[in-house]
Image (cartoon, rainbow, N blue to C red):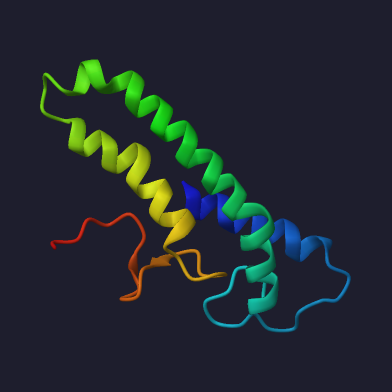
Length: 111
């Protein structure tokens, strides 16, 4: 869902710029890396921070239901871990890859 949001926000940035882009660079949303980085810094990262805070609040509310079923770890990963990683462990302007090893954001990795 965050990838779709990032793509939509990137499209808005592209449409609001006055200069047209003749060819989109590979791996970019807006057509240039600077546009992607700007959209990421000013729009996507703040939204990711809000999503992380809301996810943490929802996780705390859900604890009475997830602890008895043993799904608290999965809930923590989905509600807190994924938004946190997407917001804080992703290269600026890269909407799909996280971490130094550039794994897909949100994927669980074995330690």
